[in-house]
Amino acid sequence: MESILIANRGEIAVRVIRAARDLGIRTIAIYSELDRDAVHTAMADEAWNVGTAPAADSYLNIERILEVAHEAETTAIHPGYGFLAENAEFAQAVMDAGHIWIGPPPSAIRMMGDKIESRLAAESAGVRGVPGINEQLTSVDQVVAFAEEHGFPVAIKASAGGGGRGLKVARDGVGLAEAFESAGREAEAWFGNPSVYVEKYLESARHIETQVMFDMHGNGVFLGERDCSLQRRHQKLVEECPAPGLTPDERAHVGELALALGHAAGYQSAGTVEFLYSNGEFYFLEMNTRIQVEHTVTEEVFGVDLVTEQIRIANGEELSTTTTPEPIGHAIEFRINAEDPSQGFIPNPGTLVRYKEPGGPGIRVDSGVVQGSEISQYYDNMIAKLIVTGRDRDEVIQRAKRALVEYEIVGVDTTIPAHLLILENEEFLEGRVSTRLVEDEMDFSHVDRSTAPTLPEEEELAERNLTVEVGGRRFTVRYWAKVMTAPGSGKRIAPRRKAPKLSKQAGSSAGEGVVSAPMQGTIVKIHKKAGESVDAGEPVCVLEAMKMENEIKAEISGEIIELKVQVGDTVSAGSPLMVIR
Image (cartoon, rainbow, N blue to C red; front, side):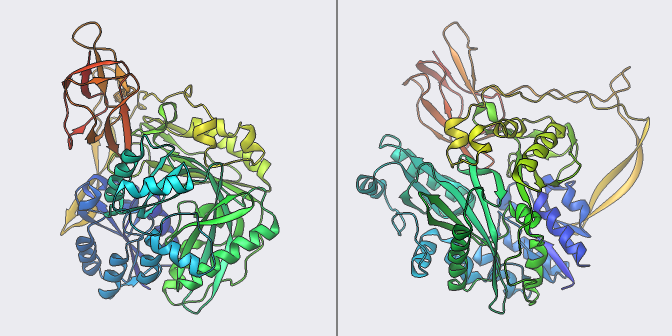
């Protein structure tokens, strides 16, 4: 294998570039116009523009990506995770174009990528799933019938989904129709497929996932489990390996289930089989046919480079090990996201005015950003992953506290304060976690928020880089230029970001309230019309940011006297949406 094109961006693109470089393989990055100066484009041996900022026009543009792969004489393509990583049509197109696909066969992606089909496959392999309907829903009436039989709460999930995207939980019949519609919209936005299904939502369950790898020679290996129970909006926040409290017998049992499913699917490459663990039983949830965000903790504990293994397998080589290695120590990954925990973890895109990663024993940071990088509304809001290792869980927790305090990020709100609170939570410290711990039992409303300071003083002349493109390929030209400074200050001043507010009491007269956008995004649904009444706390519209839907609620009761937006409008943080009197 002479070269690899990474069909992705951010930290996972950086991670693949490093693995390829360790193997002496040339790397080719792709980027949107917004990512022209991103870290992964500068790290790769080559970088090619594939379109404008929206993912549909760039990182999801199969035709353009394959065009670049041909022009760059690419040997293989690695999809990372997200975007096209679990797209069977893309995998097949890569292979049809004569490139090596670094991932599982398209047939396995199709089987496991469709959650309904994967549930059927699991049942045939003797792996029990969460009770649910194994067919695509056509109306909310099917959800109502299922809830009447199995009781609330129920989970409405994207059949082509994963990672918590396109998943909505209904705890009673009141919000059932809206949950059904919202799940379909998110499924369409993330996966280009609006189909959904329903299953019983298990309260107070743990989210346990298994890392497996299979080669082309029939070998499969179980590389331990991870606990990913700490979540918000059904998306993981903290992951650790090994899972606290599992017995050796339980660990062996869940590994056997994962391997049985992988063999039944004819799987090859790295994969993750996810389970819900409740009352001593494991229930199959889904299989992710790609490298996981949290693969890092498995690497630290088992000493296996999973991305390198992916590349070796795609190259026709056998697994470097066919027996589960002995785990050494413990590891926890903290997702450092641009979110505001005090406002329900809403996305908080912006510029990293100050950025400094921690270091020291047991600290690893996987990132694709530097100071000045932009966290855009167009993509996932993850800034970096902090991975902490130690001899045991207690040592990891102590090191994590130190590392999180050392981590400096200014310009956007982040999940760092939330992580510090989690590390003080008694249930977490005792390993008594569940998927509802973060959202139902912890209060983050008082955490500190970020401010943007003055940038450091610069010299009169400074080195600069100019990015140019020739035939779509990116080149960087270095030059020296004078620094623009504020008059008489000698310093370049960074604009201070105003903290976005959900709403403000600011109308044209007393008794009026303006509902404002808490973040940059797109209006996808409006619940009320001008002239209608609304109660305080009632949802008035849905704002999509970073492909996640956020319910915007009225802060006062009254009549909507002015509606300032319509469906499809893009708004910035603080933009007025409607006026209530």
